[in-house]
Image (cartoon, rainbow, N blue to C red):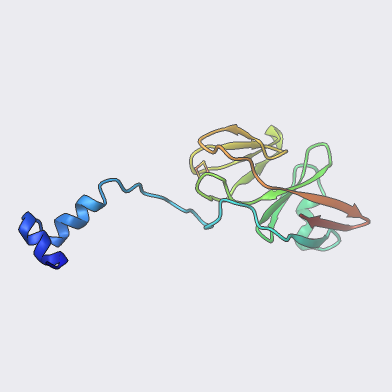
Length: 141
Ligand code: FES
């Protein structure tokens, strides 16, 4: 007996079988990035003398580069975390007045150290190292 014969014997059409199979399905919106885990092997440099990177010259500024959010906190420290939310991978924004990363999709928030401060995300952000030498900001794993 093949699948079609089996379904016919059960009085079900293939469409009904497919619907039954999917009753436990959960819609997953993957947002603008497929990754909920930060990229590995990160090692790049941002030239702060370039106009394209001027957002990082002032406290509270941020930009996205190489799959990360690189930010300058309101106290002047450089930080870098994965840009995608650990919940369903939406792109985070840096909110310097609140010293946090915010996900506009479901409202998760993360501290500047990457810890979850509000769900539904449950996993911390991957945090990267930063070192400033002159006008060269190195970001690395
Ligand atoms: S995708 Fe960020 S909270 Fe859901």
